[in-house]
Amino acid sequence: MKKFVWFLVGVLSTISVTAVAQRAGFTDQDMFGDWYSDSVNEMVSIGVVEGYPDGSFQPGNNVNRAELTVMFDRFKDYVDARDAGEEYVVDLENDVKETYFAQGFEGEDYVAVNMNSGEVVDYIPEGYDIVAQWSYPTFPEYFILRKDNKLYRYTLVDESLDEIAIGELKDMEDVLLETSISNKDKIFLVIRDTVESSGMYGYEVVGLKQYFYDIAENSLEKADDLEVYGVDYYSHMGCSAYDSEYSRFFTWPCGEGIGSSIPLSAYYYEDETVEEIVGFDDFGISEDVGRIGVEQYENYFVMITKVADELDSIKVIDGNFEDPEIVNYTFEDDVLSGISERYSPYSALIVDEYNTIVIGGSSFVLFLRYDENNVINDYQYIEEPNIYANFIFTDGQKLYYRYGENVKIVDLENWVNLNTYVTKYLEGITLISM
Image 1: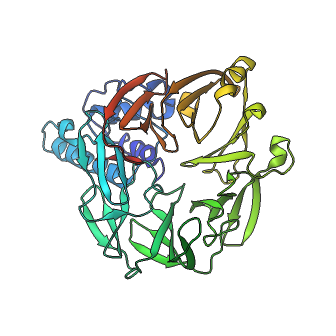
Image 2: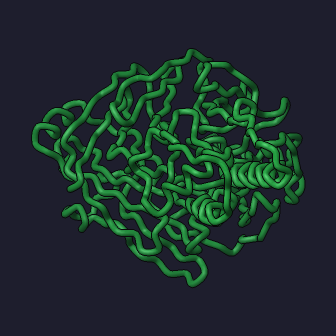
């Protein structure tokens, strides 16, 4: 359903309406293309579509099933009212979904913080654990939960639970998952059978079960014979990102002792071929695993050196393209000299709508702004003690992250703090809509 809103708006705008179209007035209105701007305004004027709580419309965002259902339902109500000669008024006060920062840790205190009010609410039914809690995209429609060694699909919009037909798990079996970067409904699911050991992790993997899982349909397809290139689930080495659209996994070295590293490759599992996407030659260096890190956020992969003295560029690819190309970002000298002394990346992401690259560190969040030539010409540090910013999230014009017992919201356009909410000291999971 990627960007299905434009198809919907195009269809709806061909139908005659009697309402007077008013300018929508979104904060990102100047980003609208001419071919759909009038359609958006018309649909807003009759109450079919609306923006996000921050005042933006975010024309590049994907549309999920829940949002699409609401739009169709509103339009049906509008047409029924029009045909009956009545005025249609949408109750936006009771129809708006709020953004929440979801937190928790292995069954302890699953709470979500309302990013408009600071209200703290429960979002997972009592007695259930979220499996692979750090593996969900922003604004998921579903979570996979575990209770009494069974797995369930939990639907946020109606709080329904449906058992996943895997059967009862062993006590020592754990679950890994990768949500497709091109379709949030498609998941690669790995169940590892483990036994206790005296090694680094306290357990040893002794068996695997693998599935392609369509969470919207709650259907499974076995994939036990699949061996993802560069990833060893037995030894905890190698990272991957599933892409259902092009039947591939993006893979890169990661694990104890190296963190994450190039080369970044694409493994096409249907024909079992491998293509290197970003290698050491692209950085002009000889092979040195661990020197250049790979940070993934949604469909973007950001590659950046871990050595301050070697920082001269950042490379990014967008995994949503069939043939992703490397985009290179360089630095102005004064920016480079200003950030190199405190440079220590833990995570990184890019928000192209606001020409911003964000780097999370051990005690800071670093904002970098680039121009139309991809030259980084401005920067700003936000100091945060003990942040360890592995998990930072974006929604339109806003960046969200947790530090200590606080959740902070930063405006991506001007890098100012919009709000800070005090909450429990818990791990960040993702942003959700409720």
